[in-house]
Length: 177
Image (cartoon, rainbow, N blue to C red):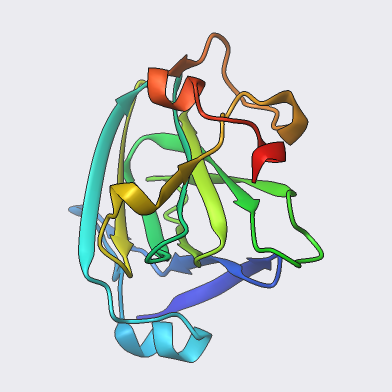
């Protein structure tokens, strides 16, 4: 059994892929191993697990916490999403830049998102179930949001007619950080 490091983006965001063992019954894969996390420099002190279910066209995000900064280990257990990560680390050479990552139940990718990134996703399938382990407890007073449709971000969302919450739509643009 192994979880391999597929790619590192912005010297921080890691795409991991577990070995998947398939037979006539279905498949089996390990989705978390502390020893693998330690090998790749990923914390193992997760304190909260979250699960969201969304329909096609929904965009959730862009969110981060400045107080009690939160790292997340994210995966899709049903469906497909376009995961977007924006580097909001002050002084970073890639500050304000974003990356788009295809994450689905089919490709099995697990993405480590360290503190210092605002993240969100668009649902590309009929339904998507997204789970993520967090290194800090949710702190609503320490949360920031960036409007995911802010043209200054330059994100090319892979959906038409996005469905965005009122809270996300009224979040400020990237220039306010």
